[in-house]
Image 1 (cartoon, rainbow, N blue to C red):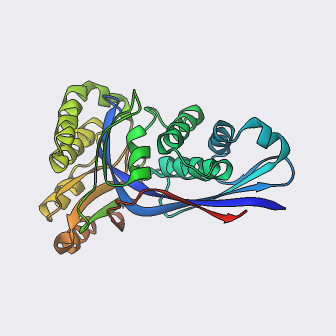
Image 2: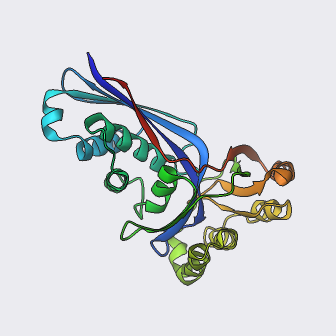
Length: 284
């Protein structure tokens, strides 16, 4: 028997500044959606319809009190529009959504930063992130531009993005995620990109991030360059790749899509998102 059911909705994000080299980063929310439902049922145990069982269990154990788990079972289901494993923050969005749903399952008043911390810690424990990805989790949760110190779990700056922008995302075919071992050698330059972000110069930050990541990952820079030449405000590899995100206003979208179409891969278009994550009680 279902005693209570909660649905949480969180959105994805793209990188403005990769946090791996400095533990400080910046990300921007996009409208690709993750929905998580959490049920409190009769019985015992944790069940889920997800890829990463360890991540889900970590979140449940970190969020739902032991005395409730001792007397009830928890069932988690997740639906995602975000392609997994391409640098589009799918793991952060899933972690946020499940943590938010579980929090709402046991407490009506949601403390946003507690939810974020639980999601990030569970992701670290499950090995789905290296830095904790506080920048990614925060952008997925709050939307807009988010600048963070990932080491201290501090949001340095949060700002809504212009409403008329979209992310044109190129997913190369047959390209694996990059080896990030060389990123540390460019920590000073990533620090400069982060300075641009803290000053609100997001497009300068993203363009510099794109050049640095392409170099350190030995990745092809031409798709990034062609997107910028096609009118993108900025373009970069997102996360650890291989996806490339270009941010544009409406008038240049078709030119950027045409630029990406010259390369072997697929294109996704997603509006920039400024909406905060939501949770609603469906049953109970």
